[in-house]
Image (cartoon, helix red, strand yellow):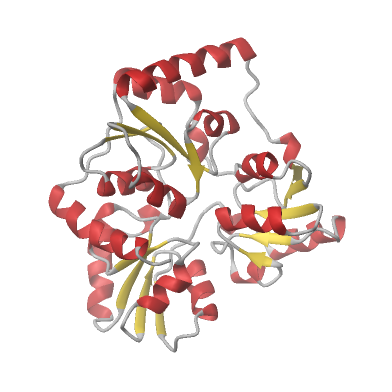
Length: 318
């Protein structure tokens, strides 16, 4: 378990980091760009960003940005979502090969086959998917609003793709009587966390609430004091009177938690909670992307329009 003040970072001379930051900020002004970063990014990447958040926060923020370009520090589906919502802006992915294994677990063809299998079901698509999958869906959701999204659909049957763990979490908490069908996808990083690790962590820190992500396995979620999206975790930890917390999500969130609640201690339940794709982005890759104007994320217009309908419906949910 890793306390929040000991996040693993790449040790580099401060003057080198300062030079990279200075060059990035100069290019940002020249490009009329904004830099957004997911909560799971390296601390130095979060610190250079104009905005840091989870999938829902970043989706909402990307519709409000006054800029000609968006530099997205995250993974491909997130930059794609920004491109879907901002056809008038150039969206750059800060590292060209930063993808999401869960998003790659389903494609548009597979989803169409599942839709034939369950023709009466509303297709609720986790935002962790490609634009083509979003275009085949009725509505998107994030881990922060998934329950409200499912309860908003008129159908009494839902096909939830691709995260089965999140889908089952939602099914157990919705007040609406519905029949659920779950696509068998999962987050590789969150799947590493198991019940024994949670029990061990709690034995070492008995006064610390256990807070985990809904992408975790059901047996892990069952042991938690709270199952929340990353932005909800931040609010929970800030408002909870406890002085220390056990965190069950990707380690990058500890940086934001430490920043927003500096008087509290945060312990990662397992040191295996590291997403290699989120960690691909560095200040060097941000600078190279901006300098070379590479890794532009583009979505064909016919797919963008269909996908935007699903994303817009999600954003209408409070």
